[in-house]
Image (cartoon, rainbow, N blue to C red; front, side):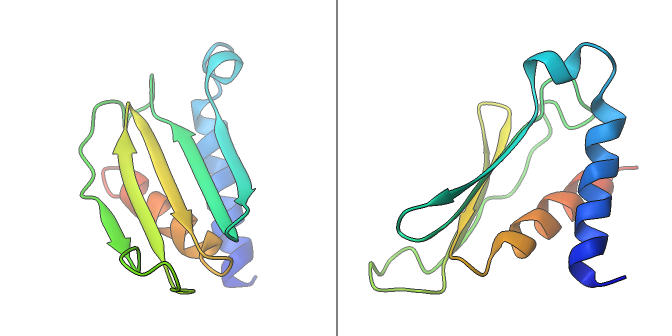
Length: 104
């Protein structure tokens, strides 16, 4: 199993644990591309074990519009919000999962 497979398996498992017949009808995980280019990840935390939990914001490379090595992660309005350059999707998901699984 590759590292990327492990990240996807872990994300699938986290999502499956949240699905209780109600949560998945209102909340979820959104992964999309950005036109600058890059990735945006948004994960609803409401009604999960992460609801209201603090997350120390992380960012790099945002001070230069020319930067091709950048990312930003935070929790805003009870959602994990991550964005990064085209090579940061795995890093964003890994950071979320490490944080999410650290209290199990």
